[in-house]
Length: 201
Image 1 (cartoon, one colour):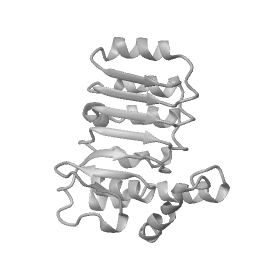
Image 2 (cartoon, rainbow, N blue to C red; image 1 turned 90 degrees about the horizontal axis):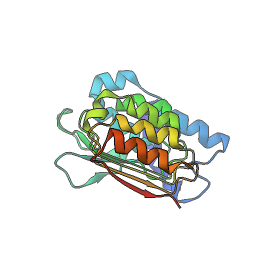
Image 3 (tube, rainbow, N blue to C red; image 1 turned 180 degrees about the horizontal axis):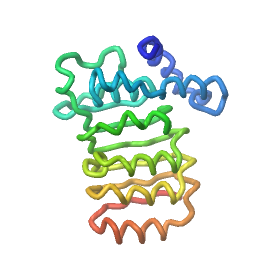
Image 4 (cartoon, helix red, strand yellow; image 1 turned 90 degrees about the vertical axis):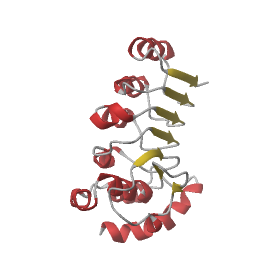
């Protein structure tokens, strides 16, 4: 069933250019939940990086592997070869429909250095809190960008201080955030070397 939906994921996500996609309509919400459903047997069979790649591309995100400049964007053209060869370095979830129920796919990733969440309608504080609790990501994440995610508040952003090696954090166009001083204070205390870039007006 997952492979079946995978074959249709890319054509459907070509619709993401239009405002009707990834909105609150019941049909798209149901379909996106299907794309986010975690297949634990698949993770066991092909490994966390391959399974996470398939999930991310099904949902309209992009992945980049260590040692490659090219971004993977086509579910049906993921590289073949030894499953342990391709380790996810970066995730660009711009305009994607990733949601919290799929985040178990990220748990086994050990090499992710950058995550970009831009115009992600289903990303909210609970998602960022879940991310911040993943032990592997706490060590590996170096850069994050969170842009135009209207459901994110200070509560979700502050949870990111658990990424103890985080070097760069861009926060842009997040209308639900009102207390910039609190965010700045917590990150200055917990991650004093962090480059925090705020563009929220």
